Amino acid sequence: TAGIADDLPALEKKDRYKVGFAQMESNNPWRIAETKSFHDTAEACNWDLIATDAAGSAAKQVADVDSMIAQGIDVLFLPPREEKPLIPAVMKAKAAGIPTFLVDRSVDPNVAKPGEHFVAFLGSDFIDQGRRVAEWTLENFQGDKGIIVQLEGTTGSSPANDRKKGFDDVMAKHDNMTIVASQTGDFARDLGRQVMETLLQAHPDVNIVYAHNDEMAIGAIQALELAGRKPGEDILVVSIDGTRDALQAIIDGKMGVTVESSPFFGPLACETMNRYANGEEIEHWVQVKDRIFTASNAADHIDEAY
Ligand code: GYE
Image (cartoon, rainbow, N blue to C red; front, side, top):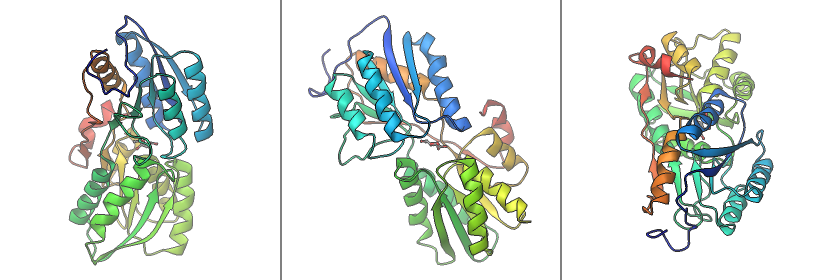
């Protein structure tokens, strides 16, 4: 196939493709919606889809990619759980001549590069998501001094790194805003709840909670309510994703905002892969544009949420 950067494996044009999707975990609605999106796309895009679930283990995710390579996939879609541990998987796929597209998370760009080791990253601008949450918070927080607790996503993952950076950079410019604690909740509801319980004891004066995803925000709301706090009244909860439970929490007045991070990657994966097979040069970052959900529009979007 012509027109493709010399050192990337090409993708032959075929009627059907053997496609690998190496999911990282399935313990939350976001991941389940993403996997479903790949399954839903398979028929329309003429894929024989091999989908695996690494159950939250980067080591298993690497092993899952190994076994897909052994099964002779034509193309790999990989959401790397963490930025560094999945680099060997990207390198092995390239060595095996399999074009790889990273979806929804990326790897350490100093080591594995789009256009060189993998074709492209398909996903959101996580720094901008963090920035937008911070800006919305600055505009809508009612008190004088913000005492902020941050619940971080999976340590070493690109969205956790970048959602923190975007938010922290904006808040650093505002003297009335203090981040008193920032701790991982691994993007999981239950851990978000547990971490919030602990942090609430250390910082009872917290009045803003920024969670890197909706699952942790919902967990935090549960912890706050158990402790007798009133999310939406005496504490502002802000987050990222746009899940059904988060939109409902916004409608119920318990959450202020969620900046969208869509899990529906199947159609974009199909389209990008076909462009590549046609010999088109693919931009290194196929960027997804995110909406913002607040009390003014949450009800309009809850029916399409997951
Ligand atoms: O926000 C989170 C999920 O990588 C963009 O991972 C994705 C994030 C998403 O666990 O809920």
